[in-house]
Image (cartoon, rainbow, N blue to C red):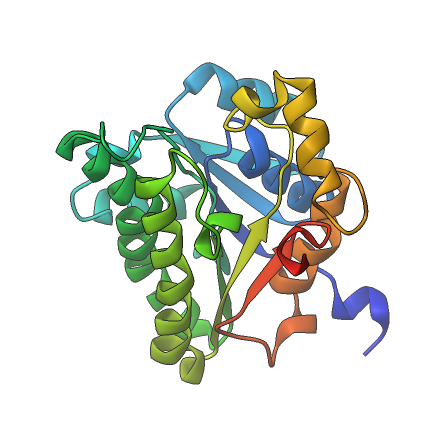
Amino acid sequence: MADDALFSVKGKVVCVTGASSGLGQGAATILAQAGAKVVGVARRLSSLETWSENTEGETAFVTADLLAQESCKALADEIVEPFGCPDILINAAGVNTRINADQVRPADWDQTIKLNLTVPFFLAQQLVPYMVEANWGRVINFASLQSRRAFPNGISYGASKGGVEQMTRAMAEAWSGKGVMANALAPGFFPTELTSPVFEDSATADALAAQTCVGRNGQLSDLEGPLKFLCSSASDYVTGQVLFVDGGFTAK
């Protein structure tokens, strides 16, 4: 198979949660520009409209408050409408409350666990049967540095992202024998809405860059190759894995 075909996502139907901003929107844009048919899912209608209007390629969007989802069935039905059955699900939506362990309330904990861990599973549960029927599919979860590392004020976020890593393995065990590969991307520090408290302090941002092996924080372009790899036939024998796109932050 030629290299361009091996890494191609052309014609694939992709659902990306968290597509209104940050790395979720970045992933949705990268795949649409590469020829995929992308359905973005997020809560903010205006942001989704702007993204869809300004993105080259075939795009559609579904507005949904993921925290309000019960079974995700109704959401899955909406996702299928624009382009048909999905080939790829990217669970990029997430929240990080950054609350000290002594101050975390049950509501804070529940919100983080639901959006970062519970919704990705139950949305996948609804969409994977379409992939199984086609005997080809991809579930790509967003893990984190905090899947492996403990950060200050990150106990609920870290617990959820540690869960994402293990959930990804369990998804692989459940579905890969039916043609659906399940993997996770674990980004390092990228400037996004979610990480804005970090990048607002240049000294902190510089200190984090210094902790990587390559000496800088992430840029959106750094996500393109790993994302296309996991979304394409190049990863046909890769499942249950977490790919850290962190410039070597976790290697030091």
